[in-house]
Length: 101
Image (cartoon, rainbow, N blue to C red; front, side):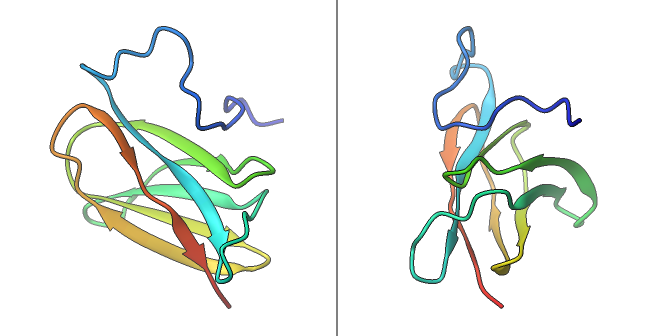
């Protein structure tokens, strides 16, 4: 069983968004519907694997990262997709990933 926390858009108590960089979002199908159960990977600026979580039933995912260049990749039976982002500092950085075959 995976030890990753349950994925939601609500941050856990005690998370200080003034000092932590949080990448959060949803996995969506091409028609905008949430894709639950997708494997969501966080890749660094050179596309090296850093972390992976399973999206919630509503497609939610969350990573705690550092400022810098990142790629979020979603893999699902509905298709795959990825998006790049470059958070420059602490805070919540929201990004949705659309998947398609």
